[in-house]
Image 1 (cartoon, rainbow, N blue to C red):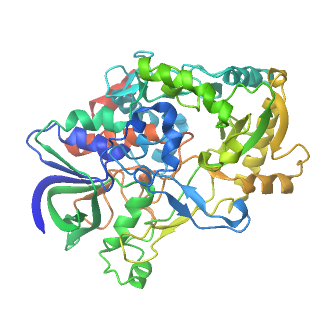
Image 2 (cartoon, rainbow, N blue to C red; image 1 turned 180 degrees about the horizontal axis):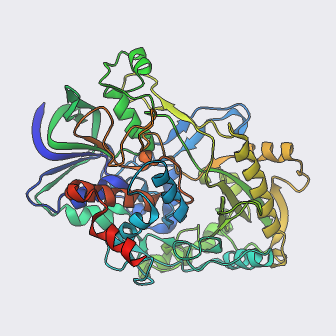
Image 3 (cartoon, rainbow, N blue to C red; image 1 turned 120 degrees about the vertical axis):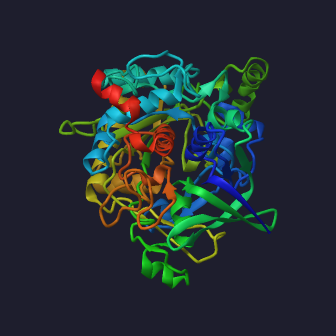
Length: 550
């Protein structure tokens, strides 16, 4: 048993924690301890963009959570919830898509009472964090740690998807993160020189040379320690030994939408009756901890391909990848230097919608169950996945026991709000409309799923549920706000206690309209500014300048 003292203790080295470690350790006068439950990110597979599917099978680098089974979803099977478990967190195992969401997402956060979180205040932090391959402009930066690159299209089917979208009457967007959010187009990615550029590479590794930062891997935090509602430090286990670390200034919880609320509850912060049920002493009665769970629920249209020019894991398909593998090993180029998810769209599910409410991911393979359906992957085909961007259904997390090692109970409660089902059904019909255009005539075989004869709302919704998936964007379980269910305030300080903040996707009051990695990075950028420049409350010179320019 040992006890050390630091100014800041950060729990979790994921997309938020790594950014916080970098920014807080810039001040050489402050000491920072970063605790990561997973191992160091030493696997060469992490660097290879085209190998991200490998981590769906990894127990070492993936928490591999399972949501509670629902009788009419995936035939009553549990739903697989991958989350990164290493330096860089989920940015070490994700598909590297760089999307910020729509401007209205952040303006909505501010309208809910979270001052300073509107789009005009957030944009400078997006620009600060990135070096975009396209260079600096009104929307992008060119001096940040995170490298953002264009798609280098390697599959003919992606071009078919864009042509098909135009033929179906939808616009093309050259930059989903710029002036035009709506339309079909190619994504940008956190890839640099043919290798993944997650937050570990971009933010953490450069900071690890500083004496002000100590990083401990395989350090599992059991609980945050309090004295009279003031966070004093943490208890963690490493190599079978229990350690205590004292925080002079703050404890910063960056565990993500699943792990952060679990750590709070194990530490005595949550709904009083739920904590007492597990024999946990109550430090602060915050009923919103673990509630407000949101996720991008995903359904798909799977079509057989006649041209067979996509990707398969059949013997012949794998044989075709050998030259490309050699190309990557020698030059860091080719298919393995890119994500498989290269093209997509943000569209309106119906003409009445003001802001696109569905996101599409097009992939040149048959993809289901996080890529774990190997039988499907061995066949030639293509998939168009549809997700509900701003779901109205809300789920929850709860403790199974007071044992920190027992995974949290996950209940997504999908389609509990009827409008989500309506958006999903309309979105699938939009997908079918795109896939039925002339652009796919040479490729189109049989519609494997939902199946060409499935047309009614009831039958189609059930087919969606049969292969329902996730886009791996859980948020909201320690939401920001001032209402009775809020967990943190607009400066991400936990209500009812002192010297404790939560900084990660769990603080989002509502889900953004797109992939969540870039927004989480920027939440951390803004939070670091709040801590380092408290008098400015992170509206700072950056935010004020933007408002004047606007």
